[in-house]
Length: 247
Image 1 (tube, rainbow, N blue to C red):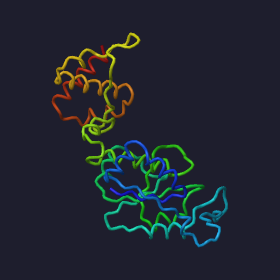
Image 2 (tube, rainbow, N blue to C red):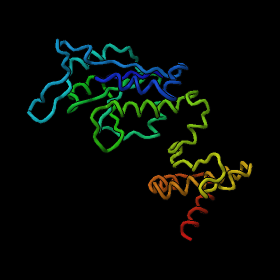
Image 3 (cartoon, rainbow, N blue to C red):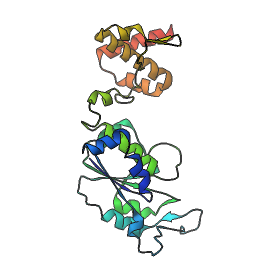
Image 4 (tube, one colour):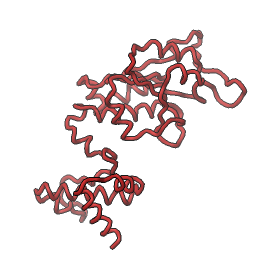
């Protein structure tokens, strides 16, 4: 998977991708993260990339020329996915993350200041994606969120695919609780079932905990899962959980 990121602040992307699991994915050749700075393509001697908005208003708007030329400099094909990080876009989700992980090449365009000249969106035919209903200074942090999340769903990136399979939201539910050594700390004990060695019971306990936690913290997700559930084992556990909650 290749990520090309159009950004006025390439160091933000490069630094973040030089640490932890992302850096390992780059080192192992599973992903490639490249930055392209529109300032390097401006025709203005002062490297200007923005100007005042037509019609008046506060802030500065990113100009077409440097972004068009920066975008055109990237080699792409018909399968390349182009994304603009924007608060106006569809909300990023695990479903979208899994969908994007099937791509071979993603171009992400990061905004800044007051936003883009609308013609940049038209020219690039970009899909607009938002990471939430709040405003950030630029698109770099959202781009890093997308890179991190999408990469986790690429085979071989985490080593064990199970690591991604059991993440929160992977099947529409929140993740079950995790514990490590020691067995007891400050009077708080690890649940006995996790020490039993009975993997069938452990799996059942974990699944049940997913239902309980999702019900308590994200009832919207719980109701959606319950509505679409067609697994007999899950339906049985769901009924047990609902009975416990009612009782």
